[in-house]
Length: 322
Image (cartoon, rainbow, N blue to C red):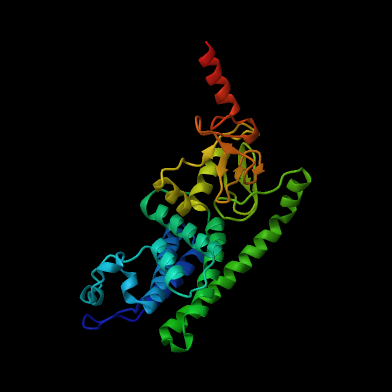
């Protein structure tokens, strides 16, 4: 029987303990999930915990910086916890700019991608498999545990904080064991794909490089299946989510295009400036395709006349000469 809390007992969490407790809860829910509800709350709790741990490191640097608008920081509001705090993107940005925290672009991208997944679960509908969520969890747990090890004095942890961090470390070992065993099991299938001339792509669901590109895609690792366009859209959300949102705010196009190679609407624009097609698996390096200023489609840059691709210019010239 669980110990009962009396009505007169005061309970509380420090910011760090609160974050670690959310992470531990997320790890437990995901690893032992027997239904979709446990998976949902596992991702929600893990995402919330990551955000709180990052905020605690920023708070240690300067408590004013955890205010969404740091210029409006007020000590009375801070003590009362009555203010709007930074979101994950703001927190990462300030940690990188205002502190000596060591978080590279790859780590930040993975944390943002997981947080985007958490936001979609909290605010919209979602479709995922347990294998996909476990695989994505491996990366972010590793990043967070490395972060805690580097950025906090663990000798100063309370008993509760030490117990929680040890619990999370044990959970990460279990997830890593699962990922290794699962990857070993699907290696023969991946090898057969490559013998057939098909290189696996990064799965937009589990983020492993185990997706077979085609008009209808499938992932050997997590079982994700969709048409190529659906996979491309999910990739834009799960992998390029934060970057994509920033691009929209700047007035750029949604980076989903018709592929010049296979003529499927499954070509995504990458951060690198290149393109990747989920239908044929063809990847274009930066500069190998150019977006037409008229139709906004990607084409061979050698065929451009000014800002127009060859097809658009031909149509323009025909109309102009009629």
